[in-house]
Image (spheres, rainbow, N blue to C red):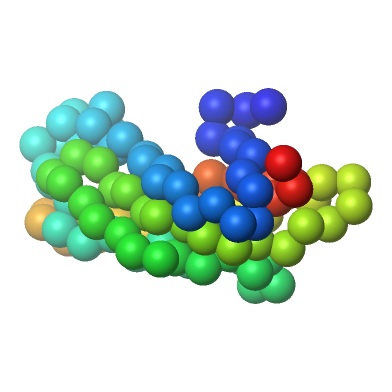
Length: 97
């Protein structure tokens, strides 16, 4: 599995963090806002989210179990204090454990 791929149970509510430090410190910029959006049809819900100046974290719950273990994309879009916008994604495989 890739570094940004995870497996979760549909009954679990777990936190996932994206660290933007390498990208942001090169520009002396920081995160102002972070928005997490699960792939349509995934059944994944953003229970809550937060960010620091260099990281974005989402607490994700739910998810649809698909035979064969389909991976769903969850996108994080940040806007920085300097006005930059960028996306990073994680991928979740939802399996009964």
